[in-house]
Image (cartoon, rainbow, N blue to C red):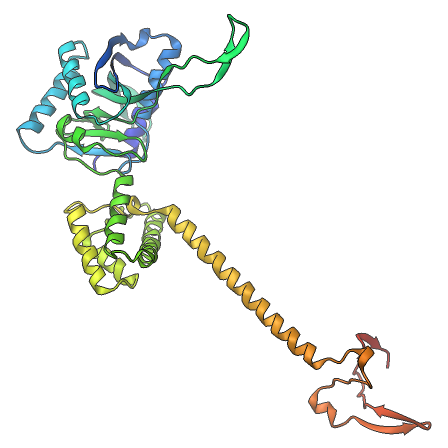
Length: 414
């Protein structure tokens, strides 16, 4: 991966009123039947203020997330089709979005490949960024080091607002509010060329997917001509399927083994995150085999996991961070901790109940006692004897100097 977190943040920081340099912005509104409803083009600086900020928010969202998670660095595939896609994107960028035929071609490709059941809006922005040079101290200088020209595309769902009551000013009453079609934040988008090493990389695309959504490989391959990648969410689901499917119908054993594997991965990730110099941990077939063995997975199941892992991930091993289900580890660890505490409480209650029964069996209630009950250490019992004092028969207990006595819990002064 060549794109860094700093590259993404540098682009994103510019997307505000005082620093944004977007030139032209174009859009295409598509309904659920894949029919074009509206196409438009605007100079970004001439937008009304409210619209300016809303469109800026959409562009900014397309540069948000985690690299390798929902922000993917895509490479172009090999072959004539991929070369044609790259050439088209470069031509579209060079047109500064002033060529309607090129824009129509992009819209048509997205509409053909994007599998979405509802209405959506395709937005395309053009920008030119004078990349300032960096001083040796790391601070930006005024002189431009490079001109970075790029296009940013965002595909946003357009949904009907929820029914609600509202104030009808013209009628001065509360009534059903008119439902509107509202443009949401993007489900996916891309930046081309990628901004890498504070410069333009025409051999890569920065691709955005909303967290939790699929990556739409058909769009990546056919529209962008790139090699498709899984998002972190997709890799997590794929890894879970690889492990659990190997156990067949034994769901309980599969859940237990998967949790043990996840707990080990959690430790690996924590160790890597504690040291910034360590690279992300890649889960190779060998690593997964070791994880399964440590989780005490039976040999036949381990072999099945190895085969399924190789088929699913091939030569591109996922990083540990992407397959780690932190919530599962946290919840199961807490559940195990709670269960251990409950067991300890139950054990203590059982021991207390046994002790109470034993004491109850030894005691003789005072009101039912026919005599005096005396408890002394065994070594003292031999020294206790009876005698007559002033004509009264007594129980005599020798007491050494410094010793004390208690009768019915009341200390006695000797």
